[in-house]
Length: 334
Image (cartoon, rainbow, N blue to C red):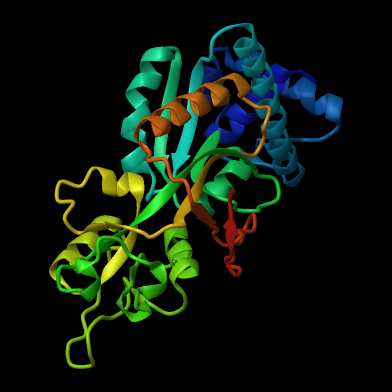
């Protein structure tokens, strides 16, 4: 059995046609067919039903195809690791970032990272936490930037920085006149939140308490109910600016606002969220992950305020395949 033979197996499984699989593999059809026959003889099984058009994997063939994908993925990772250890980081790197972090953080380091690592093709996507964790465990992405801890088996977290929260307050709200806001004084019924599934929503709830207004829910009294569907921080800000509520924003998101008149710092000890880089294989793509960590931390240090007294607002735990909520807690940090 060879890796070449396994690659031919996957080519046929993808194209369901021997001639097309051979063309995609840059070999002649007789060569590909001969190698598949040799593999089938060695294993003592038939991988494809050639009597059907298009050809179809047999039942045992499907199981071997799935295992071949795993074997080839590991082999590719081994080659990738050897290349990186022999020189500078290179190749394609798939990075996911949670939506409440991406707009404020990515512009701070992407251009500099690209200049310093020209041989890296960085592919970035915005992904909710639960989806990100599943994709990490399935090896569909290489790393993720997210709020932690997530306490998910198989996920390795490396701390990057703490990001403070600030309040965003409507001019019609009584707390608008305060120079800084005590979170204990925020009326729960006045707090606007992102919709279900956002870790920032759960952090705000753990910080400010129980039931609050929610996008996708209603606002106002029984005579003036309005339903909102967006679930984005930008929409929350617009609603609050024209309404009478308030919300909590991550510092990096608030930093670039043109109109900062609605922002208020939170009273000490200031709540922060922990931002980390997460991987499912801590030693995979290690040089590149280390380069990414250095770039993100350097960018964050340049813009984040120094908060002498703070506490971390945790988020719920997420299971590997079916994310669920658990009670959030606040952990005092020295």
